[in-house]
Amino acid sequence: MENQLIIDIEQEMLVHLDNHQMEQLHKVLTHYLREKTTSSTTHTKENNNDSLLVSFIAAKRVEGCSSKSLRYYESTIQNMLNSVNKPLKHIITDDLRQYLDKYQQSGGAGKVTIDNIRRILSSFFSWLEEENLILKSPVRRIHKVKTGTTVKETYSDEALELMRDHCGSPRDLAMIDLLASTGMRVGELVKLNRSDIDFNNRECIVFGKGDKERKVYFDARTKIHLKNYLDHRVDENPALFVTLQKPYERLQISGVEIRLRELGRKLNIPKVHPHKFRRTLATMAIDKGMPIEQVQQLLGHQSVDTTLQYAMVNQNNVKLSHRKYLA
Image (cartoon, rainbow, N blue to C red; front, side, top):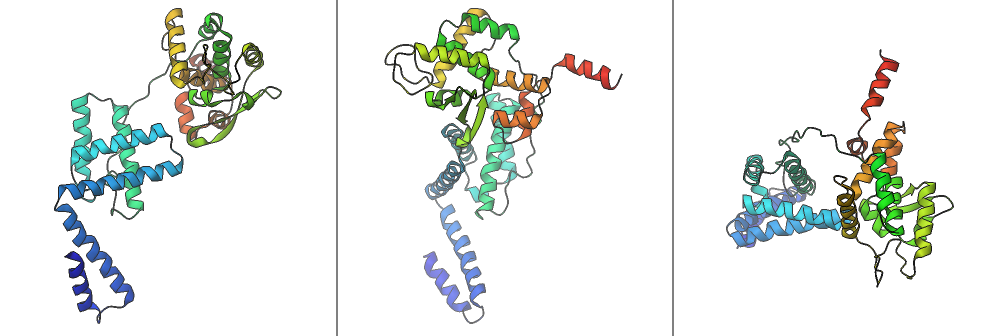
């Protein structure tokens, strides 16, 4: 019905408008008449929202987002759509503010979680704006949530040595050393193959977020322990780290996390997890004077601000620097 109405109006205006104006008229009529029809049924509205969400996720996949990030994006946006229950083009800033407030109050979510949701919604609506699917993102006027800064823990030298002394197998010793000396992500660690390790130059190539390739470097101790571990291997699996029992399958992220957590409980070391090695390396590098841009490249961060969040400057060095430069 709306198609016939559009044709009738265009026929009436044909003698009054040029080609460009007729094209614009067609776009306006199609947009408003079809949007009205779409809004008349909840089923069609939901399908339109769902199809736009699918398109957005596809765009993020093309940009190189990981499967884990895509699932987080999709579930976060879908929860908002289910709660607000409006066509995307009708969602306003106040709808989103009320949704975030309700989410925080009912679920007891922290400020970091709320800001992560705000950031994902901002990305989604900005994409809709760039694709000319909405006029302006309703998230523009929702500002970043002030989360404050907390000093995150790093491993002490004593804790690292304790883990090395009590890890219980050549594999775990090599794994701990590689995490500690390179600062690589645990997801990068489990993807490594034996052939990726360059023992001569003490380096290897890892594939980070979005399959971005970069070099990381390890020390002499790590080289010795890696060689010792590989020499003890009796399987033919190309993976660098495998399970300790047959059929010697590639070690997964959960396997690394469980092993380190067990080791931490055994040694009474709090919060032992793979990512803490990464933060420890960043802190140590900055503390010893490594330029922040080089630390950024070493860790594979797109923004230097991300690198700074990982680093905890040693307060004793701040005191010494104050005496040296200012006192």
